[in-house]
Image (cartoon, rainbow, N blue to C red; front, side):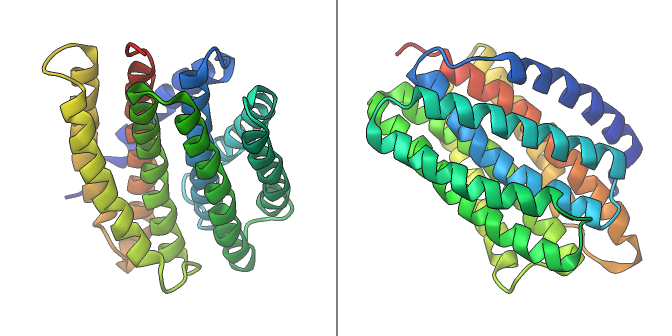
Amino acid sequence: MRILVSGWRRIAAVLVLAAWAGVASAQITDIHSAINKAGRQRMLSQRMAKAYFQLGQAVDVERSQRVLDSSIALFDRQLVELKNYAPTPEIRDTYLSLQQSWLAYKDALVGATPSKTGGKTVLALSEDVLKLAHQGTGQLEKHAGSNTGRLVNIAGRQRMLSQRMAKFYQAIGWGVGDGASSGELEKARKEFIAAHEELRKAGGESGPLKESLERVGRQWIFFDAALGQRGGDRRSYFAMDVAAASELILQEMETAVGLFEKLPK
C-alpha cells in the first residue's frame, strides 16, 4: 500500500510543531511527571539517530534537520531537570552517567556531516544513551511505587519503540545497520503490539484515554504498513513514509502518556 507521503508530511509538520512546543514548556511537578520526562529521554535517544540516518540519505532533509535540532535541545533541557530533580543519590548517579554518554553522542550527531562511518558510531552510541535513560526511568518508577507510575513508564516506552523501529528501518536502508538490526526492529514491533494491548485494557471502556489509544491503534496500522515496505528503486519514497508515520504515531503516544500521567495516584 502506497502511503500519501506529501499529505502525511504536511500533517506531521503541524502536529510536531504544536506538540513539541507544549512539551518544551512543561516542568517536572511530581514523580509521575518525572517518569514521563525520563521516558521521553529514551525516545529522544532513538529519534535523534533516526533523524541523522534520514539526513544521511537526504530523506525530507529540512524536516529531518528540525527533528534532530529540536530533539537535541529538548534532551539537553530535560537532562538538567532530571538531574536536579533526582530524589535519591542512586538516581542522580544514573543521570550523571547519562550526561557523560550524552556528550559523546551529541558530538557524533553534530560534529560532522552525516556519513555512513559516522552512522555506525551514532547507532552504537544511541544504544548506550538509551540504556542509561531506561535505567533512570525504571529507578523513578520504583521510587514512585504506584500503578500510575508503572503505566506512565509503559506508555512512555511506546514512544521510544516507535522511534526505535524507525531508527533501525532507516539504518538498514542506508546500509549502516549491523546484522542484528532487523531482529531488533522485529523485537520492538512485537513489544509495541503487546504493550498497546496492555495499555488498552488499562485505559478503560470510555473517555479520553480510550479514545487516545484508539487513535494510536489506527496510526499503528499505517506505521506498520510503512515499516513493511522495502528496497528497490522506490527506497527513498518508502523511507519518507516511515519518517512521516513515525512522527504521527509519536504525537498520538505523547498525548496518551500525558493522560496516563493524570490518572489518580
